[in-house]
Image 1 (cartoon, rainbow, N blue to C red):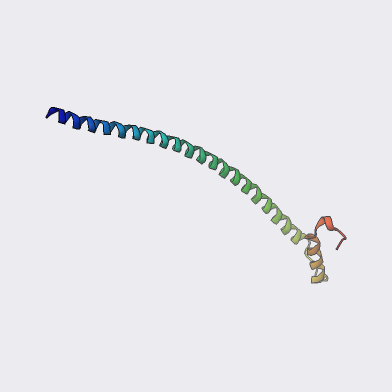
Image 2 (image 1 turned 90 degrees about the vertical axis):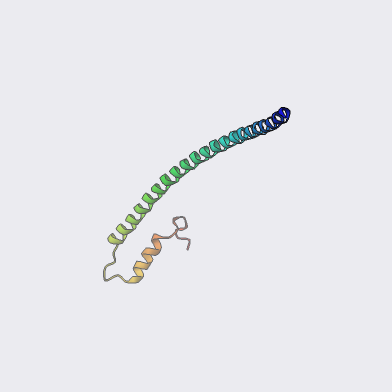
Length: 104
């Protein structure tokens, strides 16, 4: 009877050791994946920071352009004697392609 009990015990221990080995392998694999994910997160955080910086620059440039347009509108307001046609020509000149001057 003791041989049978030892045989069962050996079988259980072998299964436990196999499970332990498999669990260790899985643990190593998961730790490697975690490290890869941490690196990816770091890269994405740097990219977010760069994009936020770029967005702030673009926002500043757009604000500057809007201010310039508003200043132009305030300083170039047509007198009542000038017609809407003059204003349309000025607006057209404002948005004309500077490389295509006189080639219309």
